[in-house]
Length: 483
Image (cartoon, rainbow, N blue to C red):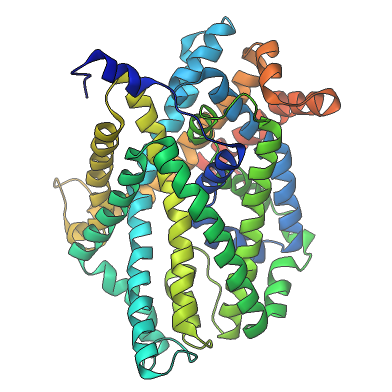
């Protein structure tokens, strides 16, 4: 990408946009944090790893680890008033430190870029299920069976077979991946206020309404008591197992989209009147609430159907569809559920694309639309490997001595590299930079806190956060170190 045409066009392309209000900033930031992982990973992790004890430890990790780093990232962005990389450089230069500290944003931005290559593929599965349930809903309305279960006449095995059928259709996988990326590109190309903010301020309230509505539905029609027992039974002896505590710590870090340059980028659009500490607290609280409420929405439905709340995508794309088969108005609730999931996936994907787009706009002076389209197409092309890895490439051996693409497991490999290396590394560099390198007067003027809270934040970001994130990084790379 190179700048061209009227110099005034390039200048306007690099002018920093801003959120129109604090509400817009909070909604966009919450949207970037609330994603697919909140809806399936946290509830299942809580239920399998100590229930209420896990939830309490998770909340402690959010407060003591997540919030200090979240505040640090947003203050870097607001002070720098540029892309994540340039904002980190501004803070480093004004602190008399090396530009090399911008690596904290480079690593995170690279992680965001590659996460979106497979995140869009999984989000394409959400679009597929919107279509599946939408078709079933139309049939139920036409047949007068709206208030009965979904997928009349199909067995549980047939319902759960929808996902393998999708995997066996490479063209459909690519089309869904492309459709989701196309929507993401369109919104990012429209700009901060005309695209990202507009989407967030409409989609996130709609998401919360649907989440609460489905939770109420599950409470009245599902096994709500069993879900409460599963998620909140207090079993501290299970929590004390090392990997369980690490899981809670990692979930707290990743659920807030830390270490991915997203919050630095979104922080750069925040106005000077926005109290970053207050906004960060709201963001973390909303994200945590969504994770907990999601379990109360999902598990009553799963348990009422007598199915296993398996961890991971299986829960959302196989177990839940089969559960809706046995629930009243299952077609309608299933359709609304996947629309809700789509909203969460879209607001996260917008942030993942915005981080590298913001950098490229400032770096090359190119127009936003062209930049978003170019990067989006590159991401789509790389993502095709993840999409096709389920079928067409599963038996391809590029060279005689290479494993097959199926053995490489492209999607899981990219997920592991970004989640276990890039994001924790970026978070670690951020904690060290703000805790030890950045000018204290500069950070104190941006963070929006004072007195005892300021001293606590200073201690946490300088000492506890680096230690905790180092554990995530080291044990993510060497999981055998802990039993």
